[in-house]
Length: 116
Image (cartoon, rainbow, N blue to C red; front, side, top):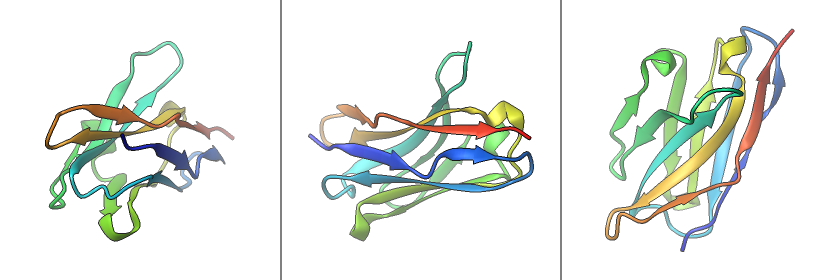
């Protein structure tokens, strides 16, 4: 069972940038990784995914502004966010899905607030 811990959230002004990190307790090579977010009054939504060989997918709102990446050697997942908007305010969650068992795991989340 992999344990995930997000960091890097905080308060940022509109137009600003943040880099989220997700540290895993074991090697993430055998996992498809993703970022989700949950905004107040909304359902949790997928932000971006990255396969173990580096293929990425983004939700439309994230295209061109967010970049997902992974460092398998450091057991870390990243989400670079730029040109942030107030509507990006949410709790951002790290997600891992085992390639072997399809069991998934979640981190506790990190709050991102975009406000002037």
